[in-house]
Image (cartoon, rainbow, N blue to C red; front, side, top):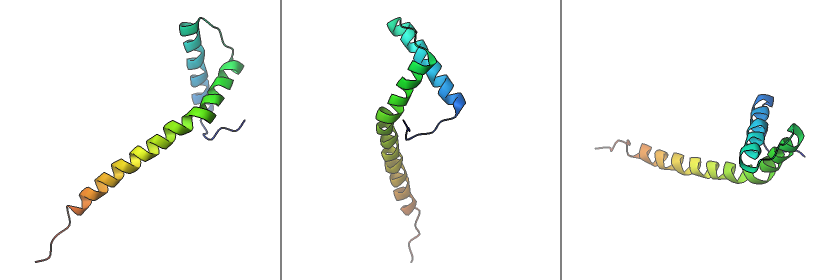
Length: 78
């Protein structure tokens, strides 16, 4: 399964450990690396794009507002 995002092996390993820690603490379940990796792949494929796209929209809105501020610096010809 090809995810729409690429992350470094180090970041993937950290995320897998975080998933394993979460399941151990919250659900008292032990997950192996393979199972935690499948969960990570699912989130990256199905859920992460929603948050990524919201971040793009938020960045667009922020930059648009800042670019409008640039026009306030415009000099008026006399």
